[in-house]
Amino acid sequence: MESSLLIDEPKTYSRWWTFVPVIPANRDDHSYHTLKRQWFDHTMNCVESVAARWKLKSSRGFYVEHREDHIATVLFHIWAAFPDVAWVGRLLDLWSVQHGEVRRARWSYSWEQREGTKNNITDIVLSWEDAEGEAVLVIEAKRPGGQLSDKDRNGGACYLDMASVRPFRRKQMVYLVDERDAPRIRGGLPASIPVASFQAMGQLQADLIGRCHGDVGHLLRACVGRHYAELGMPFDAHLTRKLAGIDFTGRQRRYEAVFDLHLPDPIERFLVGAEVTFCARAGRMPAAPYPWLVDEPSLPEVCAAKVQTTYDRSKPLWRLPTVG
Image (cartoon, rainbow, N blue to C red):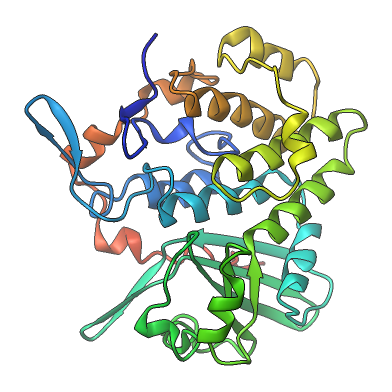
């Protein structure tokens, strides 16, 4: 069977759609462009062939399983499974960020903006709108064991001073870290900077998604738990055990079983994404669940093409569209 991995160690996937938790509906889906910012970036996803074997050329990388770009995007993107924005307020509550009833929201990954000689790259930017208007949350994510950078020492103030963020009256910098690192991270930041754990976010995702769709809710919660456990940040061992013994083969009959449930579209694409991802994490290449994925480029093809531009990386995909 074809391997899902381009490189076995460190574990590096060959195709982007084999490890995202919610597969976009199509190439016109805003979610597709949000993810494309990560998988299409040849400046961080760098490989070369040496003696007929692929080698990594960068310390970053979305395709590399335990790197920050991978962890932050994969786990945060579980929010794409929710059909509405009711979850946004609950997420903001993890950092005690003040908000009203959220009406609209958008987010993006690795948005960057250059001012003069400085180029700041954010991990996650979330914007939302409530009765008081629009607001922005800049989330700095740290992989397990990750260290604070010089930009972090004053609470990441430079990110809130980026030209596109600066005009917002309500803006907040927060940190998302492994719960085991939280005390150390808090100790290195100004006292006013909120810190929440990936595990707390995962528990929230599982609780909220589990309230939907009756018996399927148990399966949805278990899938959330497994995503976190397999990336080294488990939050509920009981959830993980619920999927023990299931063979995620990534074959068409498994996808058809999901389609036959007639679930809301984002939830369906979450369960299909779980089937694909859990198969690929076992090293097996899943079949493409949707025909349009067949023509999506591989990691070596992305590296060779070098098509993504600085302009592409600076697009504020987190901005809410103008109404009216």
